[in-house]
Amino acid sequence: MSDSSIFDQLRADHAALNQVTTAGLDRPEQTRVIAVANQKGGVGKTSTTVNVAAALAEAGLNVLVIDADSQGNASTALGVPHSEEDVTLYDVMVEGRPIADVAVQTRFAPTLWCVPSSIDVAAVEIELINSPQRESRLRLALREYLIGRSEAGLERLDYILIDCPPSLGIMTINAFVAAGEVLIPMQAEYYALEGLALLTRSVDRIAQIHNPALRVSMIVLTMFDKRTTLARDVEDEVRTYFPEATLQTKIPRSVRIAEAPSFGAPVVYWDPRSTGAVAYKVLAQEIAQRGSGSPAQEEN
Image (tube, rainbow, N blue to C red; front, top):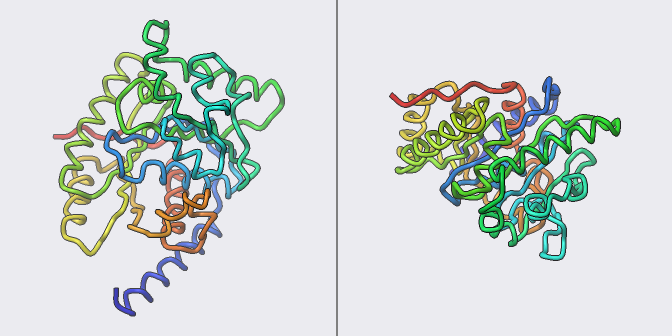
């Protein structure tokens, strides 16, 4: 990258950071439950979940992250213990443990909590194979948790972000049944549209059978390199097919975003003035300003 390009990026980051800092974020009228999903791994799904959550919490909003991926990467990125000895989402899904017993307040903000995952979550599909309402376990647990918070006189949650595994198995189905919205992070690559079409069809099927309110409300381009023709072409295609859902904010490729989880922190806290952190803060602002979002349009 040339000196002029670096200067232009720094200037853009500074302007964006000032805009986010001065704008503030309004609370939604009711709790927004957003499943962050893509059946393809390595697209920045977990990074998007934890950094949007951290940025919202930094603005004073009450946020719960549910780590529904047995790899536990969201838990790691938020510095939350998630060994087999810890109570995790597995205990909620299989043992019926209340979320209130499992949610952990993170060290980054008093308004940011996490329900951690563990390798045991990978066994949930087998454990629940003959269970009634197996697709609704998470929704019922969240309903009980939100009612409990209200009865205890606690502030309501503003956002619940569910980090889904990179598959369309029972945990992702539970997330879709529990959520009102789906946020899809996608990489600007050749096969992205094909995967996006598959995922939106899956969301539609879940909506028809289990959750009529569910919709793909937002799509965000991640690991975006505006210098490449391919990235720009994919962006044009996505905006053509999904003009309402595709967010204006794009998350750039960033070493800082990739490094942050190894320090047990989201990049918005670990290196708050980095290009990646600024992009996620702008993304959080755009998500908040959208309210409950708009349904994605069907492909032509």
